[in-house]
Length: 301
Figure (cartoon, rainbow, N blue to C red):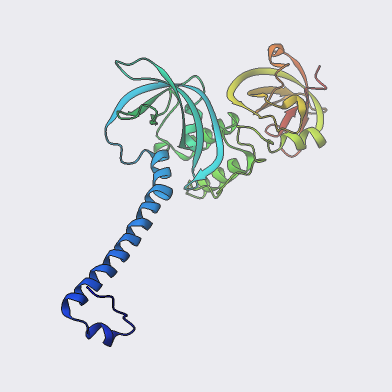
C-alpha cells in the first residue's frame, strides 16, 4: 500500500476501499493498545495492592490457626470502622510445619480486643502462596457485635478502650454514634500523634502529667494489653513502654476512695516492680478522675 496523506474526511473517502479498511484497522489497533496499557496499569498499580490486603480472588485457600505474636495499628481506618493493623503471626496449617509471617489487614474496631498478642485465631492461607494469610476469626473474646444490646455494646467499647485499642477521640465518637443508633465512626485517619495503642503520643497522658491534680493511689490490679509506645514518645521514660490496664484506688482529699481504670504505658524499668497494693502518685482530671488519670511514675518511686 502506498504512503498517503489524510487531511480530511473527503480525502479518506477518496481512497480505495482496501486502503480505507487498512487505515481503519490501524487506528483501531492504536486505540486498543492504548486502552489495554491503561487497563494493565490500573490492575497493577491500583487493584493489585487492594487484592493483597483483602486477599480477593484467591479462592484456593486452606484453613488453619495462628498465634498472634504482635499487633500494631497503622493509623489508617477503612470504611470508618476498620483499623488497618500489622500482625506478626505463627501459622499452623494441618500437615505442615508452623511458620512465622507478617501481614497487614483491616480489623473491625469491635474485634480488636479479641485479636491480641497471645491469642489463637482462625486463618485462611493461600494454597499457592503460604505468605498470603488472612485472619478469618477472632480469639476467645470475639462475638457478634451486631447482636448485642446497646448496654452490652457500650460495655464492649469500654473494654476496647481500656485495652488501649482506640484513642479518646474514637472512644467518644463510637459511644456518641451508638447512642444515636449508628456504629459509624467519623474518623478517616489517625495522625502519628493520635495514639491508638501502637505508639506515638497518647491523648491525655502527656497533658495529665503536665497539669493534672496529684492525688495518692493504690494499685488494685494490672494486666498487659499487648501494645506499647514507640521511640518517638515525648516522655523519655515512656518510650517503648508496654501498655497496662491499671485499676487504681484514688484517695482524693475530702472524698471517699474512688476506683479508676484505664490503659496507659508503664516504664519498662517499673514493670518488674508492679504489685498489688503498690503506692502510687496519680495525676487526675478533676472533671472525670475515674477515667482520666495517669500514674506519675517519677513521683511514685
